[in-house]
Image (cartoon, rainbow, N blue to C red; front, top):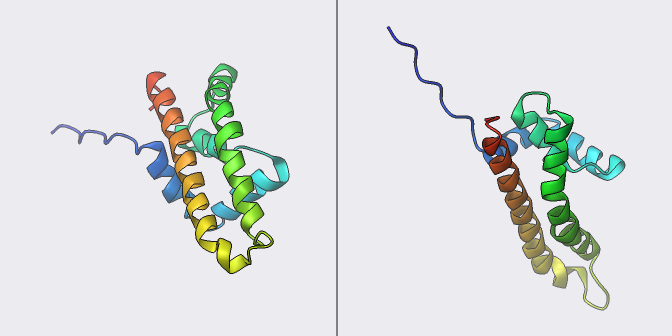
Length: 127
């Protein structure tokens, strides 16, 4: 009798959506992001990898994604937050739809960052 073949690990984005949806995880991730300035995608990446990354592996992940985070993700996040209380002279109700579109763009940008990290891990043979 042969053993059942191992299923491939989920892609990083699927893992993150599942993991982030668990009780307490979203709050913990936001705490790490807001109070400690950590890149939650890198935190989730380490969890997804399921092993201890070497200094070189972690530096490669940071180098790969830091420009994207700094130039795309963080500006979208800042803009979304700036619109939360409205933006005078436009009342808050007037900015809700725009804020939602920016939030969607921010989420897509984070997904693209995770796709790059997923490809990095697979190139390293880590998953």
